[in-house]
Length: 279
Image 1 (cartoon, rainbow, N blue to C red):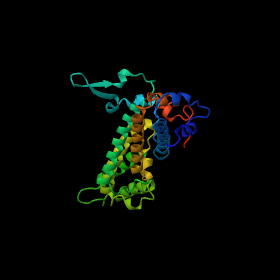
Image 2 (image 1 turned 120 degrees about the vertical axis):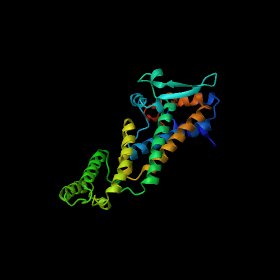
Image 3 (image 1 turned 90 degrees about the horizontal axis):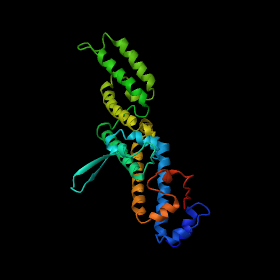
Image 4 (image 1 turned 45 degrees about the horizontal axis):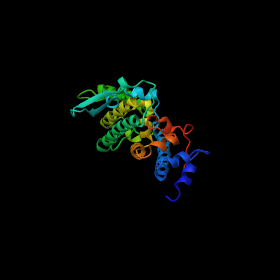
């Protein structure tokens, strides 16, 4: 990089005194690249909010609610005897303590794991989802009820011969919910396929409820066919955080001078608290 000081002056807020940055002895070209990474992370956050509803900038209160899940609450480390010891974040932090980058990384890793598993399930067992472009979370139980009712009306030996009028009523209700899902109608003909789909949507509902505190709208993601892209952007955000921490080991003074603190992700995402120009 030919003139990192000039670029750094453009990135940081107007009037920032660069003297302490120069006196630190830390590589200014690496600082420039790291602050550019921060801007990419911010851009990735906005994409996730717009396309999936998920906001990685977790407040302390929202992060504390996620500690109900053991995979987020517990951390492990080896003691002097090389025995693995578990630590509970609930027992070591207050609900209003700042959320660190390490905490955020744990959450993103678990969210990525859940969504990747769902995407694998979709590819392997649900390559054709008739209702996905129209499904919402509150419709899952209603469709489940329709399927169960039709199963009960299918009398062994005579089918719907004596219950046809009831079956048609259920089908009309189902068709009113999904008028554009033509391949799913009539429901009696596609009952097995729709029942298989419902297993997938119930899993979606479980994940959506688990991560509701982040704002995740998984059914909205499915309606837009953006599951793979959401997973990719989560991965990019996680990689960006890892790069930030890795570079930060060489920039302990200058990142602090720029306003970025690994102990508080507010400094990472809040453009008012830490304004950075994209250069």
